[in-house]
Length: 117
Image (cartoon, rainbow, N blue to C red):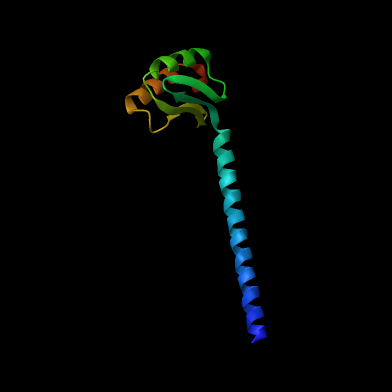
């Protein structure tokens, strides 16, 4: 009977180690994906009650002026510029309506930074 209890305890600790190993692997994959997508980000801007704050990166000053004008009615949101296929592209949070998002994409397309990345 003693041997059966010891075998059960050992198999339980092996299963626990497997779960820890699987969790570690998943965490490493998530971290790698986060770094990969972050590398593509040119800038990130936060909008709170119509006020624009640069969270990360460098926003062209003239685009920043357009951005402030376009989002002054937005209560809360995120605007990001990402590199994709050698060009910049604007990505917005779901809290920003499609008409505003399109105005942002149109304004960003006018800047050389959007074309040569």
